[in-house]
Amino acid sequence: MNTPMSANIMNGPDGSAAPISRNITPNRLNAMTWLVRREFWENRAIWMLPAVIGGLLILASLFGGYNVVGAVDLPTVQAVVQAGAPDGMLMIVALFFIVMSIYSTWYLLDCLYADRKDRSILFWKSLPISDTSTVLCKLGIALIVVPLVYFAAADLTTLVVSFIVSVRASSYVGGALWHGSTWLQIQGLWLYLIVSSAIWYLPVAAWLLVVSAWAKRAVMLWSILPPLALIVAERLFFGTYEIGSLLKSRLFGYFAYAFQYTPGDANWVTTEVTAGVGHHGTITTPVNVLRFVNFDGFLASPATWIGAAVGAALIAGAIQLRIRRTEI
Amino acid sequence: MPALIEARDLTKKYGKHTALDRANFVVEPGRIVGLIGPNGAGKTSALRAILGLTTYEGQLNVLGHEPFRERTALMHDASFIADVAVLPSWLQVDQAIDFVAGVHPRFRRDRAVALLAKTNITGKRRMRELSKGMKTQVHLALTMAIDAKLLVLDEPTLGLDILARRAFYDALVNDYMDETRTILITTHQVEEIENLLTDVLFIEKGRIVLDSSLEDIATRYAAVEVAADRLDAARAQRPFYERRMLGKVVLYFEHPDHEKLAGFGEIHTPTVSDLFVAKLSGAPQ
Image 1 (cartoon, helix red, strand yellow):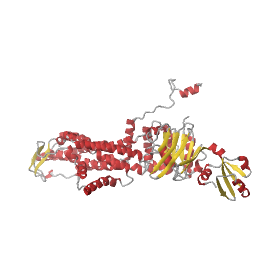
Image 2: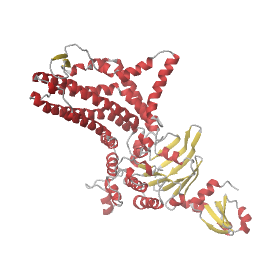
Image 3: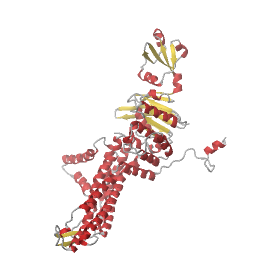
Image 4: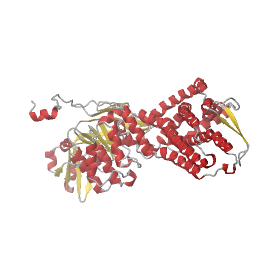
């Protein structure tokens, strides 16, 4: 029999009986946002590294020397800087992309290894988060979140550097050197870079995760050794170099698959430069950097999708390893 | 009430080495169970299997889950402290609370904050800046704030000094334990936890050699201090272990006949640690 006291405890405010055990439905999306935050806490280099690079580029644009000082013909100076804008912006993109690739490689190799090494995996595994979520989160950090951070940093750097160059050059050429159309094209280029490189490098990233989830030590060595052994074995027993060229095209063939680069076509303009110190001859620049994008060719290439399938299989392997390997 | 943990022929092999060899045990709700055994006896393997961290053979049911396949679901209702050193060094105290609050539906943030308020640990401190004892306090606060049905502790006080160890167990018993909880604990320092245990599981070479509540131990076992002149007569009652101490001999009996033994000397219930030593080192003489 319920006394008023126990009725108070057992019943909800509306008088209905409260369930004895709340039915808990884990909110995966919510857990994922916390997993992503966790990665930012642990890996502060995700944002600090691009911030430092951007800062250095901005410093260089503030204090760097100009070759236009000796120029006598102002329209020529303007032409030089305008013609150089796409190159300059692309160089900033390239620099960020290279650093990002190196950082992501390191991150992927370390992310499932570090917490096994310091045994903190036992803390993470005491929480109701599936190993699938953990592995997919780390993959997403490397292939989507980190590129977005670098994208933002590159954008901000480009804006600030362009502004500084414009102000510094205004005393010579009396106007802004802002190249808005190229900047807009770069936005598209970045988005394409992020999506296409994520697909292209999925098997590489997945392999790094497998090593990170499996190796007891020397993750860097273990990431290189098995492929190298395969190449050597193939060479010894068959005298061929199929695996090697396959891996080479995966690692270094991304730009060949994802972009098209045909010098001399309608996408290029050549500016004649006849005056100014250090700027003799001609400058050739692209009209639209997005014309380099070979989206159709990339999507139509079997290599793209075979690689993605291999990547998916390796991800499944990394998840299984993560479930089974708790400690070193 | 169904058992909280039920293991039948639980076996774990690492290559040729058998860490768990058809172990059978049951843990009932509301108990504080000590899993006690020498190094390499299979304690950690058993806990890892229970927590879903490793594969195993045989049958294992924990809170209605098959641990290895359903670790995520299991961790809604169970929590564990593996070792005090496992909180990551870069983690700030505030971040730890935020994270667990974010991912664990049974975590009660106010409770964790209240527990930490009793200490002098501030939120911005990173784990690497904290002493081992402080880290334990943080981990315990996080774990005790989870409304779990089962708490598993694997050598939770390893490397702590006596003050920190005592504080750990006091907090566990006074602030955490109630009839809805169950604790499974392993430790080397049996003497330290025997006052709080309700049940013991002795494990040796991967097998459970004793599964008993403490009340049952009192009726099932007896230790008798025997004077030297009555030793032979006492030995005729077939003790399973004897221990020489400062001019007297203590004989240990299973299913004792108190009337007969009373004549040989003072009878008492062996402590868990004495019984552990007696059971595991005492081949029948």
